Amino acid sequence: MEALERRLPPPIWFLVMFGLMTVTALAPPDWVLDWPGQRVIAIVIAGFAIAVGAAGLVEIYRHKTTTSPTDIEDVSQLVVTGIYRFTRNPMYLGLALLLVAYAVALGDIWTILFVPVFVVIITYGQIKPEERVLAERFGGAYRDYTEKVRRWV
Image (tube, rainbow, N blue to C red; front, side):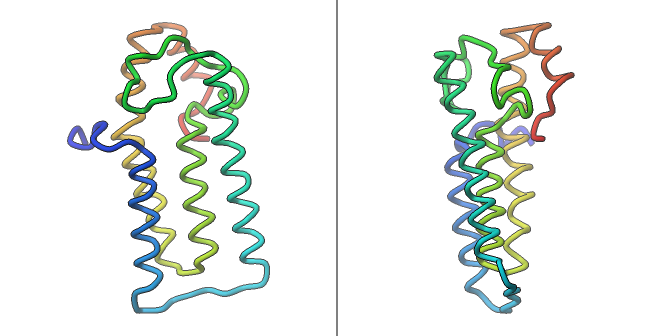
């Protein structure tokens, strides 16, 4: 999995998965599930996803530390407040939930398979390298935090 490490930033992986989901939904076989309330549920999930990701950004800005997934070495503070009390990676969680919302909106059963692929890529390609930097930078405080708060949810 080392080959994945920080090659592409998470928003690019999100766009890649979004594109693959779109192509998959357009390709045969056409296994689409269409059920009442499907679009509403997709919108609710998307709204929740945006709220989770935005809450992460707000908390990072409030603590005046980096939001850049490519410049993790520039992190100046360990953020453990706000949404970070519930998930260590709210921005990545928000992106994953947006993919879930898109899969629900498309209704194609194959598209949901891209969500776990995204989660694995982000976990091994971005989060684990970030965790190593944070553990080195913040030591015991970061280890204590990881014991209390899960990586995703």
